[in-house]
Length: 252
Image (cartoon, rainbow, N blue to C red):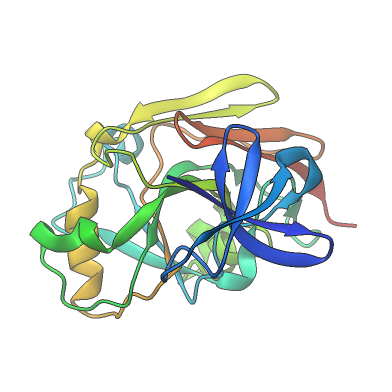
């Protein structure tokens, strides 16, 4: 099943997506719901970020192709991204006016947590995932290298991008993610190449942190991400989900 969070006539709702049509549901995908007869075409609505997470977590260095010559990690490298940095499809990624260094896109598969959970085993971890969406973990490289923490390198406003839809019927062990900048492919890899698979990541996080409905887990980026410039269009595509497309502009 494919879910969308969207705005129509000034109201925000969740719906089930079938081809080019969204059918509104009575509540949200994280609770019991019914599918109504209230319908919109995709062109009639604004697709929003797929959830309102209490927290956004991300995995660093989770592909060998991104790890480079650095030694293999013994456990997942987890960091936090702020909910205030979250934007959805079509919204602008803003390059901060006080930063003149390199800002990169990072295309990623994002897991959307289904329910409140803690101390999850690897064997049961995927039972707590509602589905998957496209993500872009935008990163200011100079700040990432220079700061003791990644607070602004990873959580500047608009640096957490997710959407357009949540797809429940995907195998997290074999999802191919592609990223493009101005139509040129810059990343392409399958989650088969994860150093730490999603059940391992969820179990590791849940040992110390309660996960809640709508929380997002960015699962890592492959290869060498591309630099973003004012005026660029960056796209993250996952078959079965769709294309997450965002313009880039310099803050004035």
